[in-house]
Image (cartoon, rainbow, N blue to C red; front, side, top):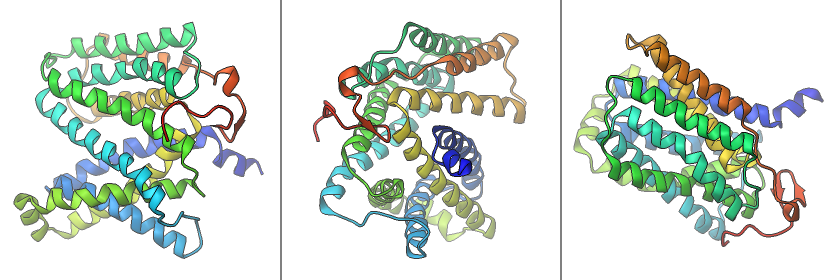
Length: 317
């Protein structure tokens, strides 16, 4: 009984999401190394996740929502925002270095916390939580500015990514609150299937990636297969964590994943941060630990399974 309780808990979803996030990053690096076709790898993860979900459902292990016109329309916007966020993320990193981009990323919870209040029925963060968000931002800025490669540039794409990312975090939580699904696997199925469709044209028109696919090796196939399995797990845990956490808290957890990634990179590669930079990273981790999720407002507290059942969310259905 205790085991089932753990698997349905917030901790299980969050820990699973963080582990998959870090593991998938490494897996993607390996996959791109063996197969220089990043668009195809993303498509393989999306359509592969759909295949995994349908196979598991066919064998009776999980329950998945069937395709319905209304849900397809509702999740089409999810797919569009998802693809746009990934594209702008790539463009931002193309025109701005990682350190500059990280500062933008770590400021998003401040904006999303206000959106949580305006659109998703939550209270504003407490004074302690506001301070934690501020320390997260200052800590990331401190780390970035101690790095020798820090350079302020690429504001245009960073700003576009910033707006799209904030919409993504808030809108996907809105979808969870307003679109009734039979299971979390239904969200995984719909979002991956609809996002995979435009990706066909992305890599299909890329002659460089087509040539890489023609020369794919056994190692490349194995690397992509592993990334597909991790991608399916990542999608499940991400949707599960979103359902259990406020949009701001989910964003803070995502930022902690980025801090962990930076720490892993410092251990693996020969590029080491200064003592001040390392101290800034630990400060960020401490701030994330002490951050407390803002509760729902009093008039929205008629809840069931973490979803608001009283007053309707302020975003349109």
